[in-house]
Image (cartoon, rainbow, N blue to C red; front, side, top):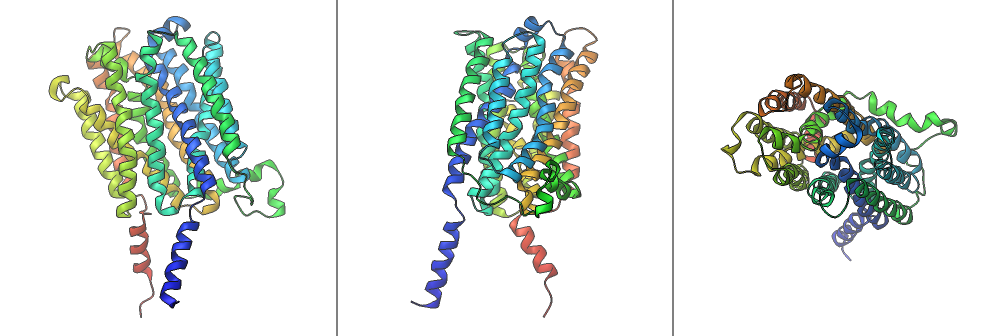
Length: 437
């Protein structure tokens, strides 16, 4: 056999060895976990009147209750990232799913206090979903497919976010009460926890190389964060992703239905469908933009393009007459463009070492959801202040929408300073610094 033939065979073998079936199967089940956490996150947006009546809360109070999710999400994102780096996914991921299942059921079992605890547990458990999905995908797939895998992951999540709106709405106004929906969702999530425990492979080696001394003590679990959090590029990734998330997590998934009902005077059923189109836009935007970023080998141009599309859509939504565009177009374009918010998740892993894969994602999620946690109640307060104790009108939502427009603009500016980590960018950088003959 010729040397060239042997080289080709070895090359094919190396490529095949980059795929690890057990981790890919676990990643596939983790997508169900991610689907449910997004459905739970978005479901309150279609039952705001029911929640207001059940808990007796003001606009600010209700926004704060729903926003509790983001506080524990941000905190447990750090814990989840460190946990999977230290112990792998066999036990940590099912634990996260179990927290989400208990919190989901608790949201409907009592008054405001029980609902608040349930919402906190939901956020804590949900924090494991994306960290685990990225961790499992990174262990099961070659690095060249990472942005695409992250895009697919977010696509499934946004399908859950969309289902949390357009599936939930007819259910709670038809065959079941809103409380029953949360209990059934909790039971489904519990089944996913069992499945994750069964299919997730046990790590043979520690995820990060550590000395015997460093392995002693709980704090050593968080050692990879020292690397991630001393890297300025990590903060840029988190800032860009967090700012691009705000128009969807707070704008569309929490207040989108209310904006369409009270601002544009759209009837409830159509408002739910139109708000859900933002999530549908994500379903297409995340994998497509992730694939493009992998295909061209560059991250920054795709972030710029997605952010620009978001900006145009947001300006049209808040400042042009409602009848200017077809009913579902702007929401879809906003969601499609915001798929670019997932690309910094690839970048933060590429600007940090391999042994900090989970911690890099955890740090990213922490920064992203701290921004959402801070803005969710602040935005509810701002709406109430602009309304001056009156009704929420189109003018009120238009003024408040400037917050999301500013977030997108700042993200665009921050992207200028982001390091290009795509394969084409790395090759160009290596060629530039290669020794001259």
